[in-house]
Image (cartoon, rainbow, N blue to C red; front, top):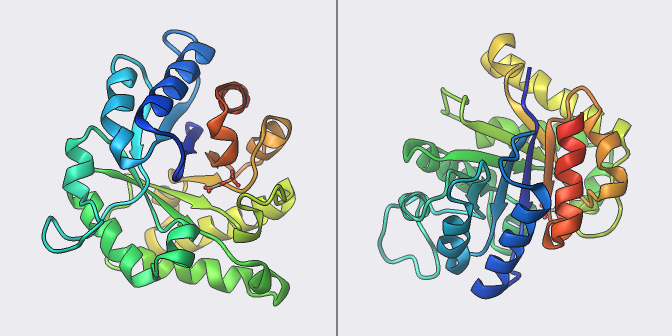
Length: 252
Ligand code: PEP
């Protein structure tokens, strides 16, 4: 039985004070002692400590939006896995499509970051997903399989891994993959994992859906057999909407 996991990716939004306010509002929407599913929040780096302090004593986890594969050094603007771990993060998102699209991330650099994050004791959310052109060209399966295989090259233990399937055409666009479209790709990802790691390991790995999840479509998506929660962008910036999505997952 896989526990559903919902993570809010706040992207480049909110000052430290605004982030703290949002975290406080989410906690109060969920109520004390919420434990219906696994939940995480990914603020910007400067806000990690303030949000982490607020999450102490709750079941909610602190998540980083990225991390580098070197420990330290001349990498201006980057933050290492051990730094986000030391800041209190338990999870890190790696390979988000915005990182791939705007910051030159490739399957190879995603792979390096994943290996480093896991070696530092972080749990990893690895993002994969096809562009609209790729979907229209009928290569969704090939693209996503390659992202999974190359992202996990040389990773022997995936017990601390979550995969987020995020079709690029659905991120921040208001267009959601239908539950059937999403399930088809989630099923394919699990099949790739079975080939790489065997049935027993693959059946334990959570695969989140991401791409314009909202309170109105969350329950239908999370009811699908291979959709184990969501990576939520825009809707995670509203405490009420994020809490409604979390509750939908908890009730599935
Ligand atoms: C995301 O960026 O991970 C995401 C899913 O964004 P949105 O929910 O806004 O589409």
